[in-house]
Length: 110
Image 1 (cartoon, rainbow, N blue to C red):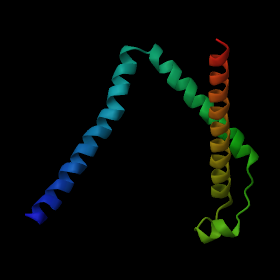
Image 2 (image 1 turned 90 degrees about the horizontal axis):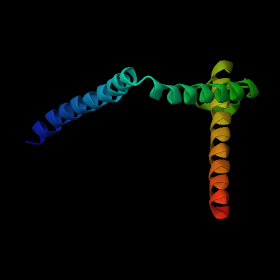
Image 3 (image 1 turned 90 degrees about the vertical axis):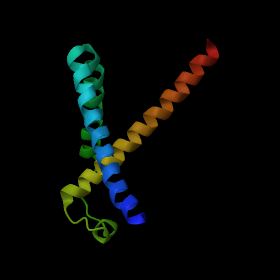
Image 4 (image 1 turned 180 degrees about the vertical axis):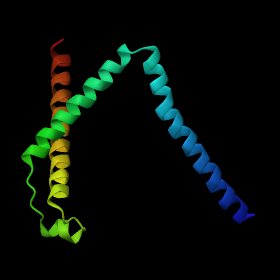
């Protein structure tokens, strides 16, 4: 009985994850086709994040340190991508914190 549940339970879980993945991809596309204006905000957000990543990628160095080599990162391009992702994360976290502070300060004065 345990083998039956573990084997077919895993298959059922895989199928359900696949259905959820297809639904998560297809349903927003269907909604975007029926209401294209709703897609504008998403596109603007993706472009802004891409610009922030490009800035982070441009700032970061391509130096391969010992920590990277110990984790099987030997390419300078990969090192630069990692640096760009870290800088992008810093920028987004700082932007979120500033946004939270500004929102709370404006609520105090209203």
